[in-house]
Image 1: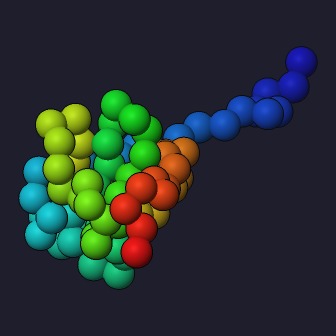
Image 2: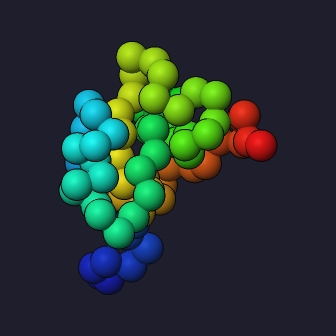
Length: 76
């Protein structure tokens, strides 16, 4: 029996209600808006950044480590 073979685990997210809180948590990373329902994140400048009731501000690195994908909607 092999232990750990093929196991994939997501990094725990630290969600924040406000963008400034998330930026203090990860000062050297970008902050994104994570839509939990859709499983995607939006960067600043995208139309749905900071909108909706099913999301939170998180660090980009945590979102990527948590296997969330970047939304292509609203990219300029």
